[in-house]
Length: 159
Length: 159
Length: 159
Image (cartoon, rainbow over all chains, first blue to last red; front, side, top):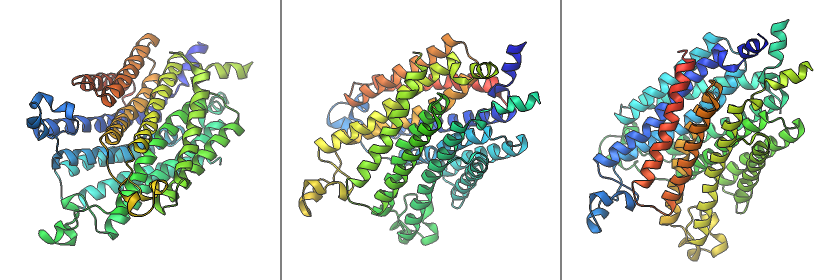
């Protein structure tokens, strides 16, 4: 019985933490998807960067022509890097935020808006949609992370 | 009252964890700032990479000339990537370190030196300061993360 | 005595969490090693990107010739970026997975395969080994992270 009480104070039973875990897994999986999209464009556009990757397309000079950049590959790579730049702060600050004791409804609002904005951002980058679609979705997700950081610093501040 | 006792064993009430949360939020916000600096240089130098981003500067050929690289934009981008390469290990290893039970004063020393070194690194990169200013600040922050990793592995080792 | 009991419910005493901490520290240190490998190639190949980094090799025009790209430097940098793209999801999803209550043996299997695959990936990239060596090691590590994400979402799902 003591054990069960101990268990019930575990992070994973906390609703805010469960919401954080759900949305973090979703945005990290979305970020991982960018690798597959880049690989898809590299293979269909035959645009590689490592000589050893072109061997199956021919030998010597005939393979060398596939060592080139392609606009679609570069676009997917930029989307991936933008994910790293924005999802890493979300995962780190979001964890601290989830542990800082926010209301579940407030936390869900933050996580949902961030996740929605980043999924929209990916579509806006890859289609691409005309600006300011991509810029706005970037700014919305950025603001959500900033808002969580503010709550964290207000709660924990120990310099 | 039982609830309060449970609360008082929460991570967020642990002083080392509060210090970790404070410095992690600060360095992640600093990293996020690099996006704004890059955007500032892109707009003032009129140097973009996505065709859809240049539309507000003109149509057709007159917009194409803004699809170019600029030394200040590239410098800010390199600073941003260097942040990712170094702040990600700090956030990950720092969390494990904070949970491994270090003295508060030792932990604060690690967090403060890392944060100071990375803030200096950004100034050294953007101004730019002559070497070895940037190199040394990189090495100091790198060593702090390494020191925390050593403490973590010594404490938790389970392969 | 109450304090000790509280201590024994700490994360760091949980075996799965200790395994997570061990492997996370190892893969993050491995990722940090890529910075040293890039620096090694930059110095031995004399290939730099920042003008202030070439000053010790000469002044003016004689230093400018060292502002160039080098295949080995670029290869190490691609390996580093690939680490960021794949180790960041492992660290984030792995933490949630470790907290979701998996069997120790299952967790160790995930952590060991991921770590082994990423270390192999680095050798495959730097030597380089012929494909599909690098591709397969990338896919194995990717699948492990995906498997952990599936377990996390099945356990915590709260949208």
